[in-house]
Length: 198
Image (cartoon, rainbow, N blue to C red; front, side, top):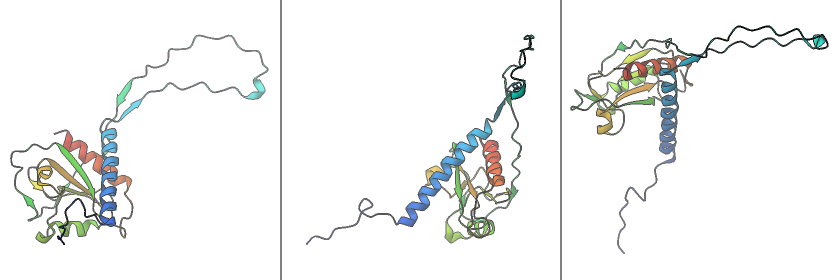
């Protein structure tokens, strides 16, 4: 009998890991849609409609039509995004590499933490965790910058992607912050807009 070695192809991933990956990909997709729609937010000017006549006046003779003023043009007016990203500098001493090895930043990767903001910052400072991100967005919209933009944070699971991306973590703790908040979305969108404008 010949022993069979396990390979990556015939070993299935644990169910919990697959659910986490699927959840993170969904969050990444939704956040990307939110960021792209908020970075190019536009409001269209729509002319107001005349109010309808009450039913009791329906039998009255119709007045002669009078010329109406031309409606305002339907211009697209760019609106300013209401939030300005102002991260607090909270540097970590470990879990990142200085510089980017000559690589340019091409992507913004959004993650969620699954632990509190404070525990996330602590995890980023523990060398054994081997994880960090450039920014962490707390539930109230506060932004903490942990790794400098010119440095490589360890967040994407692949060094090539780490060198070419900025990592943003959104706090999602099942105890202190069980749901994403509007403030988090606005702060993450403003931050992503500020990063992509550079």
